[in-house]
Length: 65
Length: 256
Image 1 (cartoon, each protein chain N blue to C red):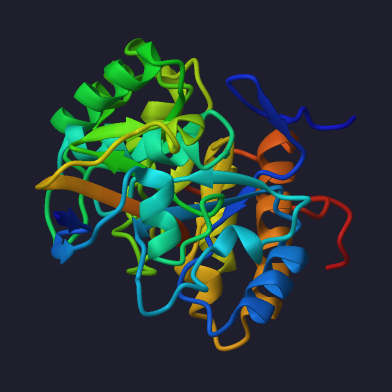
Image 2: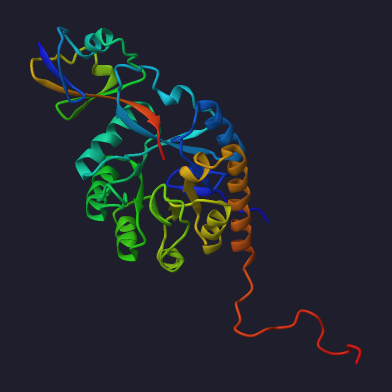
């Protein structure tokens, strides 16, 4: 299905947020996730299902002032 | 007589110098600079994961003794800043946020209207809000009244190193404030930091001033001393400025 991740369209098949992070080889402890502008709590990664055209923001802490 | 600690909401720190983590050549220099500065708090930003470089997570590289203050740098609307703050909290950082909502890309001047909107909502959601702003004394009061735990007026534009261009307004903000005032942005060298503290600021936040120095670790040490000496000078109560001279040596008894 088509997902928009960090502003870019991607064709990925995954059930839930946990699955998505696994497919993207992302450490789920290092990132925070937003689905359609709503924060997804870490404890809900497993039970937050994804559907086509969902928009995700996956962020990480970086250097800044 | 010892100085009190820097108290921001429920947070308490010994050091009145807060540092950033951006623009360093590498993490080793960054950590050495943090160490040399004596800072207790460092800021980080939040960005979209770069799928080509997954080693980005800076939290992995920062000294665990430090308290991390996430920022909303790069946000141009209250909505973006609020979402960023929530994401930062979810990453496990303490419940506080350096709220930056920018109004102009070239100068990185704050959009005070959007910042105030975001302050109110984030305070309601339980965040300890440190509001980055300019030296507008009216808005400084508004942020305080909206529940900001600290107001952070810039000395000059972010990354410009121009120092404290507006000491008079910062002094007025300090006079009116009931929350800690931390000068954030524009500190370029040690004397800038000392000046901010001599005015009575509760602390100074800087990034480029140290990161972009030729020798960041040495500059970090300079900034540590500058913040301490500026604070001591403020607490010591400086002598008044006078228009005319006032001799320091006795005026009588000299040979003729």
